[in-house]
Image (cartoon, rainbow, N blue to C red):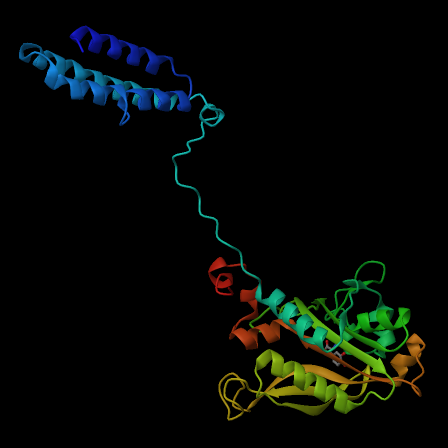
Length: 336
Ligand code: DAH
């Protein structure tokens, strides 16, 4: 190994570094000269064998070789000619985090309800958000003078249509196209001219249920709702019925379940009554059956309707219905 040979190797390496056109070529140069089995380590190893008067100069040359090559390779890096570099893309920047989304509590309750009733043999039916006066009111035995038809309660559309105020019209639509037995639930959006506050929203969701067959009784309704509530709220909850009135059911009931938090002894959530109201329900009125051409002497059935937001609020301890619509990620993120 002579001084000239070191100089030649150095010049060759510098030239190759300048000539390399992409990252792979640069890396090849680095390995060839600076790598563990590269030329520079070999030169370093030979220094000891040189005559003492040349050692100093050779050492200086070798160091200059190494530093110069490292510098040249470094300088070439930003001039990387790959497509990514040409586009100005900096692949050394850390990536932007991508947070997984969460299922909205309203969607989550609807999915749970579909799953639970699905196991009891109910299928999902759907109906339009824009309804006719006939399906939303008349066929449901709701007379024209009923207060719910008032323009201050219902969004009427030009031409006489309306935004459905309940999911009950889907009962009519299903019975119009299908003969018994019928066993459906229908989740969906409803609209009422309510002033928004902590418990009201002009736009909300209901799940409707309908079961029609021979010899269906109120006891079937109670058993089904009790089974549903136990699945939804926990195995120890009980249900009770209170007499009520709905135009489309006779008899009509309101359904409560025993408070899942205090077990019935009374707490803030159940307003110290031990019970929480969850659904309106009843036995389908014979007049409704006649509207859809079912014979009320042969068939009987029950129906129920419940508010999805209300269930979500009870289940997750949400105190203000508006939180479900503000899309504040700090709120939504909690529903993992
Ligand atoms: N549609 C009723 C409401 O919006 C709820 C309801 C009550 C539905 C009784 C039913 C029922 O199917 O049988 O308040």
